[in-house]
Image (cartoon, rainbow, N blue to C red; front, side):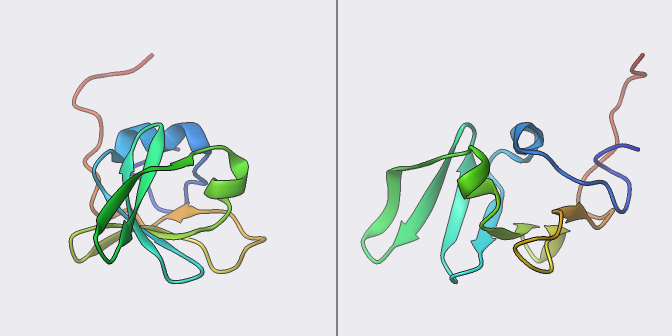
Length: 96
């Protein structure tokens, strides 16, 4: 399985591939992935000193979006962050 396939369970290190994509958290906050951080949107703009990506922040991610396309989604806190198979191109070169 690959990140571009449907049903791939993402890990925190896989967020590197989704740099500059939008993140929606379970509490309703919206952020942008700037690996290895996630900037959270506030009223006055984006807070750049926010969250390092370890497991406590990764488990709070509900969706990863690229514009209107949902790249990955998590149903609940306990479930895995699964890709939808849309919005990510497969690798352009053969990996071994």
